[in-house]
Amino acid sequence: MSSMSKFKKLAGISAFAFAAMTAANSVSAANWRYAHEEYEGDVQDVYAYKFKEYIEDNSDHTLQVYRFGELGESDDIMEQTQAGILNFVNQSPGFTGALIPEAQIFFIPYLMPTDMETVIEFFRESEAINEDFPKLYAEKGLELLQMYPEGEFVITLDEPVTTPEGLQNKKIRVMTNPLLSETYSAFGATPTPLPWGEVYGALQTNMINGQENPIFWIESGGLYEVSPNLIFTGHGWFTTASMANKDFYDSLSDEDKELIQNAADYAFEEIIEHIDGLADEALAKIQKASDEVTVTRLNEEQIKAFKARAPQVEKKFIEMTGESGKELLNQFKKDLKKVQND
Ligand code: 6CS
Image (cartoon, rainbow, N blue to C red; front, side):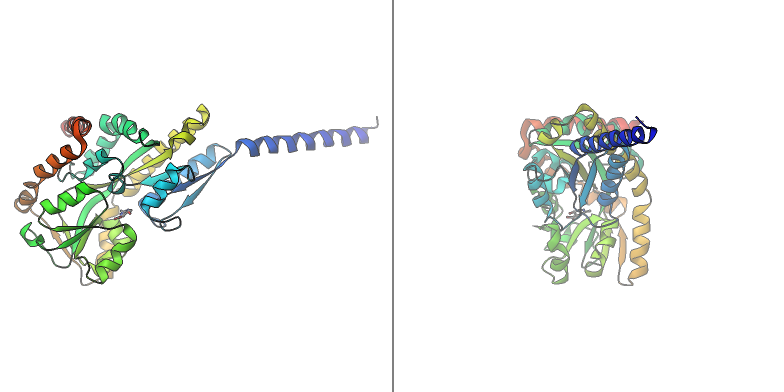
């Protein structure tokens, strides 16, 4: 055989081998779908894109991210994930609480500390978060990947208020879980559950008088434009969670499972850095953008009056969740004590 025809044959074999390799890759390389509840550049979006970056840098898989509104409201993306149409979803306990009552634990006011470092340590170390919650999510066909904090709740209202009495007759929008309604009833207000898509319009048309959310969201969603009085009550943290459809997750190879767990860990570390200082930056932007905005930080004495209403919400949580919720709450408190004593 001439050296030329040898070369042709080799080229032919390598072209064949290349085509075969590509075909094998395209069989094992998947395009996974991931939806979250926020807009471009918001906390859940940063998390999703870090998750995607890890997956795509460390495998042949690709991840398609869908933001708020592209596939519907929060409840819609959860339904699509449970049905297996989506592989991953980021949904906050504010909405998941309707499906998994124990997830409402995040709405017992003044349960969580206000200090961010302690909160982060809690999310890292807590047995309730890292061992108990995954079992509860699994019962609903969900593989819980990561729970993480987005920021402290701040109330926005049509007037600055410092007491539960001041909240009387105020319609406050809450996410759609029953315990959060109990919290605002306990605070003296009239809770109004609404999906996210209706909040801005309801504030603008005075159908509601206020709402609660972390500062970054109040800034990014422009809520201060229609609800300009910011009240720092220190009553809790907006927490969220990333998860996968459990049947999909269980069907993956050990290698892909590890990839996903590592991607979730990587995104968590990145998000912890991202939220550090985010609330102050967002508040500065709000104050620059509007002269109308007022900022009220409740003092210890004023907080006491709100805190005094917390035990009745805790009681409701136990009524709603029974023995399982009671055990979770005990573990949660034990875990909190541990990080607060460190
Ligand atoms: O208030 C809400 O419904 C929204 N808040 C935040 C911070 N993220 C998504 C959620 O839908």
